[in-house]
Image (tube, rainbow, N blue to C red; front, side, top):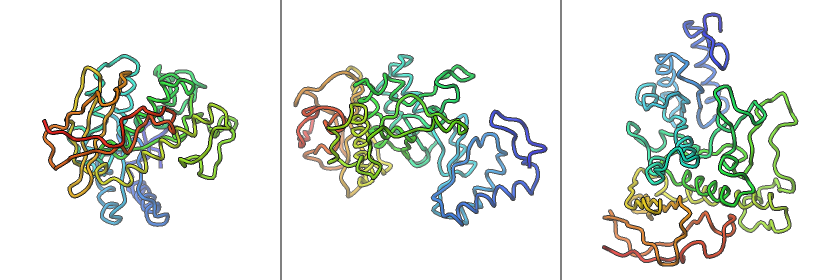
Length: 350
């Protein structure tokens, strides 16, 4: 299976020139879709596979297993994975790195970069064409150097650790905000294990060292109640309570997306762009359904009550009032009471 394959950083390539190997790979994919009825397949490092093989395989799998999603991980990112290689979607690492540039000071276009993270790039046709993990995936979080830099000089960390650590209030707030942005974006949102309860440092991906496997914080219940708003974390330690608050926030974002047609539609505009305070207003809607206005305040500026107004531009529908349905700075998520405007606000025409 490998005798004519080239060497890669991840091991020897398959002998793609052999028909028997192609048959084996296609049948392995079919087995997962047919016998295990998985929702789809994510294929790693497809830039190290023959393009014509990907085209043949994906065409065959899509015809025989309609409704199953085929996802590519390809470097560099390109819409050709979808338009040419016949994948339905691909991992988009760029939003994660763009956000890190903002927090590291290597970029200062907060409004424009946030807009690009929320929307899809040119060349893509639909939101589901991209799987996005703003907080990072295993590639950015897994570390084999015990926290040190890899061979290319890169650090691998959970997002909260990159922006200040779990004990930093600002780092926790920024992590909540970016997951909320991820969950309301025009994409398939993804979160790496551990981020849902604010895991810090890095994921130990050396499977041979069982002592370094990721552990849930002490005293955190494993029966699912951690994700419920009514869970009482007051008696737990500070770090564990912070985990509970993050889990509540993640649950709220996920439920909001699950029950909102607007957040899974292809309709999106950006009528409000405040480059002074670094605030972005994104409008998402679906005909004959409630619209969703997503306001992202990436700055340290705190809007006082009734002081700040969001421009909605020319609305494609009638609107008279808006109701607050989510606030990443709510007290139950680790913020404070009074961190947002009243539940109902009026919509005024210019």
